[in-house]
Image (cartoon, rainbow, N blue to C red; front, side, top):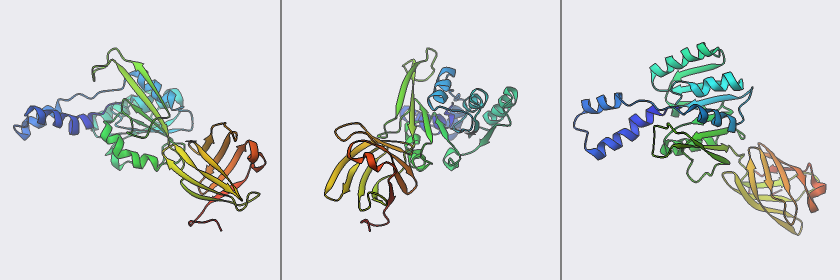
Length: 284
């Protein structure tokens, strides 16, 4: 998946400035117009879509779609629909022609568009091959997407938002960088769970005070005169604590409702218990 926009607008100007090559606007324009776009190798493209678990029913949005190969492969091999966003009109036309040749033109769309103005809400999967600063600029919008949305990036991470999975692929003919390998990162957008939650059924009077940093959560479950420290991970809408002294606890999040899906130990009888997000600072 090419990132020509970022090479032209960010990376190349920085390199030219450092080399003292901004003698004139005309020279700058000539150099940037000659910069080739860089694609994700086929094995990397396949790994990105496979790692995200793309399947029929998914809608993939590729930011910086270049020649359209990610979206076309998602439609042809994985039976998904897709949208490719690219600033180069020639590449968009090439992508449309390739989609027609592959027989998937009815499943995909390619637009000449600023990626920062793209509505990501319809996506179940977002694919990226952008420079690190652009990933970080997109991160707030990505974290606001529907929980469970999968994000896959070629080579660049999301800063202190650690990936759920990552892998390294050998790419002998890679054109960028010294290493002849590519990294692929996967994140799943976590539900937002920080705050106070109040039990409504068997455990009425119980509360959970939760904190969250990306897909990791911690907090305290309090009921009557007992407390239990909580710590675990969030995978989309599922929260899970590791099996330990109190046994594993699995909770399911649906908006402002949190349900105990399974529990061990003292909470075993509380399976199915519902907690609701408190509107204030205390449970009524």
